[in-house]
Amino acid sequence: MTRGLARTSVLLALGLALLAGPFATPARGGDEHGHDPADEAAEAAAWRTPAEADDFQSTPSYDDTIAFLRRLEAKSPALRLGFYGTSGEGRAMPYVVASREGAFTPAAARTLDKPVVLVVAGIHAGEIDGKDASLMLLRDVALGRAPALLDAGTLLFVPIYNVDGHERVSPFNRPNQDGPRKGMGFRTTASGLDLNRDHVKLESPEARALVGLFNAWRPHLHVDTHVTDGVDLEWTLTFSLAEAPQAAPSIQEWWSFNLPPVVSAMARGGHRIGPYVDLKDGTDPTKGFESWAGEPRLSTGYFNLRNRPTLLVEMHSYKPYGERVTALRDFLAVLVRQVGTSGSALKRSVAEAEQRTVEAGKPGAPPSDIVLEWAVDEQSTPVRVPFFDFTVVESAPLGRKVLQYDRSQTTPLDIPWSHRAIPKRTTPRPRGYLIARGWPVIEETLRAHGLEVRRLDAPAELAVETLRLAEPKYETRSYQGRVRVAFQVARERTTRGFPAGTLFVPADQPDFEVAAQLLEPESPDSLAAWGMLNSVFERKEYIDPSVLHRLATEMLKDPKVAAEWDAALAADPALAKDPAARYLWWYRRTPHWDETVGLLPAFRLVGPIEVPLSPLR
Ligand SMILES: [Zn+2]
Image (tube, rainbow, N blue to C red):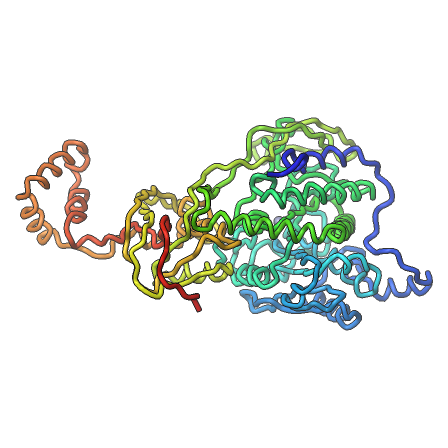
């Protein structure tokens, strides 16, 4: 349970507070320093970032970004450039560690009292504001202008996550975006995957690399930087985070104390800032706003499942690039400085959230549910939004209504805002999952998430719930390169024999919610729902009708079977008329039927597991 404000809405309190804020002098990213003004001007000119040097008309290429980071690294012992993976097109994926103590490895960072903060830019490579804002901050660090940032923690910057998309430059890549005028990268990877839909299935080498970086460092705060796509209003910077109950209470509480000062400081600094939202009705803003429930495939859903505070920052796409980048630079600086005032509370809130998951999964823990899917509550709260004047016009070319804005005028609108996540689908928390061997996609994905996986050293009879999938309905078009599938799920509690070597994913581990999302078939991000386990639906063997005829004729001599058959025919006229259905009815009753048809190769452990286990190597 959380206290006071935490149970109300952090976002709402913020949204209302900041709208009244006066617009004063913009905040600067650097800290107080006492240089000679002339020296300072020369230094500033020499150390302009590539975007600054081009007056924010362009953003530097991958090579130019790396070259600038190398200069910074050579300048400052507090910076280290590293690479954490290789993209589909073979580019090394860069990250920068900023640490006064030179804690450039996870082990070194863990010896410090400070938290680790991860800022990711360019997950959608056309939305690259976060890179140029990060370069400005890192430059300030290198020049000793931002000591408070280094005071706050160990800072990890991923300047360009989608490195391949970043190099596919065109000024036409982002129709809804004002700059950089000379061009920006592309949303997806070279193979067309959206990295912000790949956090659970981890199909791309890029997503596997980023999650690997996270596994190694286990940062205490994650920030994902984007640019919006649609609604036009005054705000330059918008943000979103998971609120309770989707966020762990300790994390919600940390936000409730630490986000309002950040937002207030930004508003005081003259930045127009508000919550990130979508229109409920794209042609009628008065109907209100809706926030998304953070789905696990998205960064903010995923890192939330990993018990981290995670903040989505969406710069407003119709604001000029320079305005966006400086606002984001200021925001990141203010946020990190705020972390500096509450670093131990941040670490504690993360530790508490992890411990909560571990405790819930321990043998003997009180029964609890896992939420497989969240929805946004219809219940709303009022919010005042500084919309530009808009009219609804009938578009002759498009044959539909569209909004047109007049940016010379602002009309604040009081509208309802739905933003609270509520559980949509839950399942009782198992004690863990047993995984049949021979499914590399399951094993590799579990391991890529850094989940603890053990193996049975001896065969065992275990109390489990089996999940049998039937009636697959494949979508008629692909999504993220996958044909997703819906199905019926039948559950059965049983005792089942498992051979030595079977994998076991225990529930008492901090990232267990990720395992549940992968393995519970009804999770929208499960491997089954993504169509990655489709072979379970398929019947692999065949029985010749002449063979089945002889078997069925023999079986019908048993009065019990004959009665069942008569009842089945009476109950289902379609069965009577359908030779294929009759074939299956009989095939299933023979000893030749393959019992793994439809059987999910992940079993929910519901009883004790008293069998020797060893770590999976
Ligand atoms: Zn984006």
